Length: 523
Ligand code: G4P
Image (cartoon, rainbow, N blue to C red; front, top):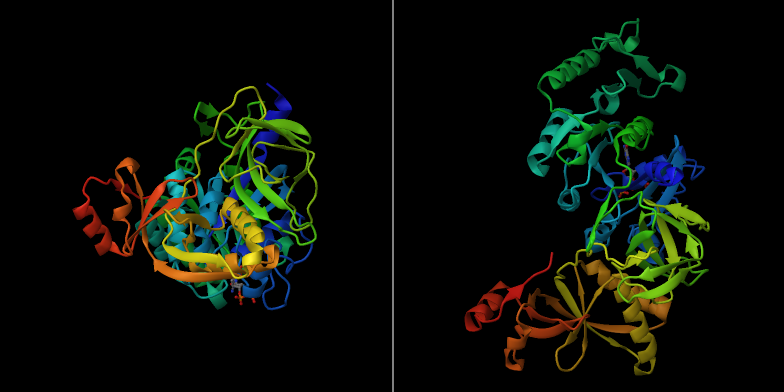
């Protein structure tokens, strides 16, 4: 085996940050990038109010709304490791995109606002991570503000998320009285708002401070000692194995805005987070260190940079090494493609990569060859990675081009946006009218905006409301007459039949009337 490849792969750490909007994902990402030297000044990634925008906020609509719509990828080196952070949109309307991105990582970092605890979106995303069985690290943010009691937060993690929590460090005070953290892992105290040369105070074997330090005189220090003692005695057990299995989450307290606890978090994370893991294919497992190249596309995005007007497929490398110009096989079609144009992701300054290994994400130029979920292989064996989950949309719109002369642009735009996974495409059963499905309303707004700006097409959208979509096991038994206003028969983009039911009642009524039709839903 190629030892350099093994070393390279083992140095990779690929993760996504999951959180509810406003918990501090952008702020934390920015601090991490600063450590890695990927950006030079705070405010490059973030700055809603200053008029600057996140490095990861590529698209115009994101700027207008100050939300992050699409996932992007950021890469940097730190302490001999190469870190890939996959950004995810916090807004729940883009959860499909986020779920797919979570398929491409080896671990996740969950940020929790100390004052708010676990919020709806965090819970949803956590469940997807749990389903995949990936390790989850927790960063409890905004300790510089008054928040909930840390023990209460730990309990909430266990009760709401059903995962054991292990405090890697413990806050000493909070808000105006925030003095620092008791770092159990490094057996030291890290003081808040203290110069670096005096910030870290070593603890003795009993986990206490020996010297004559100011902090020792505070009741908050005593309280922290007491809490830590309790954790030592009655807390959960932490092992790398339990972390890997998703049984326990290491919890870090800090404040991203003041860059406190972030470095300690990053260094501990790098120590425990897994390097690229083996992946399942339809022909067994593929190890990350296998020499033959393979990977899958988890995202396609058009026109990320208006100056380029191109389309980029995001590929997670799962084994081997990418080399520019290498021929690969697209497993879905058996076609051989030369990967000549590729991009690595260092913010919006898109460098060209010459090589990348398992764990890395590369952007490959796409002229319409790829679909989300596609596998690319470089060796002789042709196989496909596990399918990416498809989601059952809940909202539907009938869409037409305002100007009939613009049909060509209209269809091109729809096809590309559908291939990107920005929206789902359906057609009425006999008449082929276009119906778009979405998980969240904002997806339609992004669609409309992008059709106008990128494909120069105004669209007319007729809201047909929320529906319950159900696929059909025995399509051969479906008859035209079963389609009605309340149970509309459509086809999905693969030609599979789907009923869109007006509501639960309509669905039950249908099933009573046509018990022979076997319905099922996607995720
Ligand atoms: P998001 O990407 O998860 O949506 O969160 P983001 O980082 O944008 O942070 C949301 C808000 O929380 C921002 O304030 C940010 O400054 C603040 N914040 C993040 N981390 C901390 C922290 O550790 N302590 C405190 N006190 N605040 C924090 P904003 O006023 O909404 O935005 P901005 O205009 O200040 O950028």
